[in-house]
Amino acid sequence: MRDERWRWARFAVVFAGCILAATGSDAAEIRLRAEQLSERLEVGYAVTVVDMNADARTDIVVVDTNRVLWLENPSWKVHTLIQDQTKRDNVCIAPYDIDGDGQIDFALGADWRPIDTRTGGTIQWISRGTSADGRWQVHPIGEQPTTHRMRWADLDGDGRKELLVAPMMGRNSTKPLWMEAPLRLLAYKIPADPVHDAWQPQVISEELHVAHNLWPTDLDRDGQTDILMASFEGVTLLKRKADGTWKSRPIGAGNQDNPEARGASEIKHGRIAGGSDYIATIEPWHGFQVVVYTRPKDAAQPLWDRNVLDSDLKWGHAVWCANLDDDVDDELIVGVRDDKSDSVRCGLRIYDPQERGQRWQRQLVDQGGVNIEDLTVADFNGDGRNDIVAVGRQSHNIKIYWNER
Image (tube, helix red, strand yellow):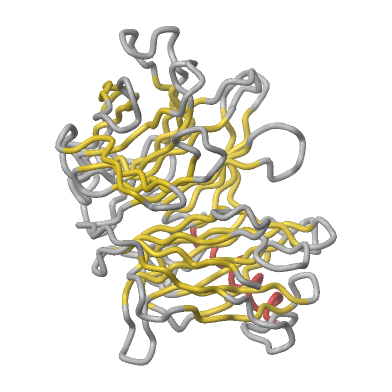
């Protein structure tokens, strides 16, 4: 099955390469001004954005190894939500009003042990105390070794979101191939009493290996939430069936050249003028390629067309799709974690679709400024323009990129 999918993927990339170019020079570059915030991180594992204090401003929440911080807009004053209240390292976070009190809580993944597939991986949620300035309380949800990414999504259409939790590897699997057991993608429905009642997981999928990220989205616009997964198998679409179980379908095989680091890594869903879709990935796992998948013109083709936009990077580690300029296309925003050479640095890259995605224009921003572990997008100053915030691993920093187009 893997060989067959890779044969189709090679056909797809050759076909798409006839109509796509990696760079262009037609569109004006997006003006982004970098501002480094004062707080130093040990490792900026994750960043998310939410209005923490109901002042109609979007604040920044950062996951560090042993703490969770929020930076208050516009002064960027640092508040500590938790510190040394979970097992190191904290690794992922997802905001939602879990207890229904009208205020934001967070699900949090901790006890991150990258290649320990037997132990570790705590899942919990945190709620505020008497004020947002005080330490928050930690409430256990469950455990899953190598818990790595989490998202909230309304999976059953009842108006209340479930917590999706994706471990990186299958339990008890071993390097270098990690094939002994598939990983379990879990969904937790919030219990009636989220503090005292047990959180019961549903296994959404148990067939993929080494998943780096997931993205809930309505890919086919049918009003139901789908799930995109990036794993050693490539790009997989999960759709919910009427009986509540989930069916998987491969739609992109990724880069399968190296059996020890293959498939796809980061993943997001973007849209282009005219209503067409693209799926953005980093390939292979922890890879060196920026890839977009577009729907095939031939409906009989099982995989989407694979288009390599860029292969001159080392360890792409963050992807986002958002409109940064005055057209209607979602730009592809990529965070590169490591330096490839003295001249090919870590940092931020923007890929601007041209001619409805027929070509993409690459823009390098603040090269060497952040060893980007994660990034996200929000309008921080209310000017109607999407800005970018990125957090670093080796650089230990937080930077806002102000959109001044």
